[in-house]
Length: 123
Image 1 (cartoon, helix red, strand yellow):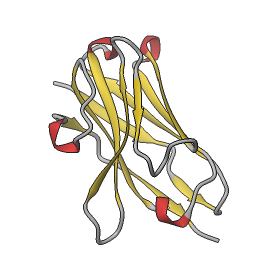
Image 2 (cartoon, helix red, strand yellow):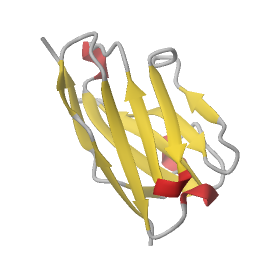
Image 3 (cartoon, rainbow, N blue to C red):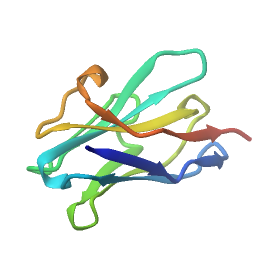
Image 4 (cartoon, one colour):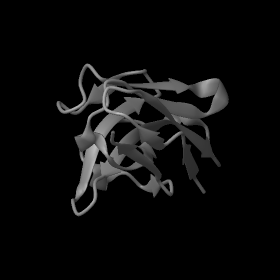
């Protein structure tokens, strides 16, 4: 069974940076696509970024392009989300989620989810 554990969330000022980590257990990362998906207070889930670890291709939502970077370390079974120039509207619970092989741009297509990590951007 695939088990995902996120870490790295916290409180940061606007313009600051955070790096989220997602450790995948129970399988190897290289056969999976991993996405970061967020949910802001009172809002629905929003797909943010995805990496297909089979070929390294990455995809980003327009709202985070140029600010967020997703990357994977297959040897450590870990996916990262580097978040720079954070804005108040980035405040949300961030989840990592897995599906077989290839990325999807729809959060509903991901099968296994972590418990989430809170990111709060505030002065």
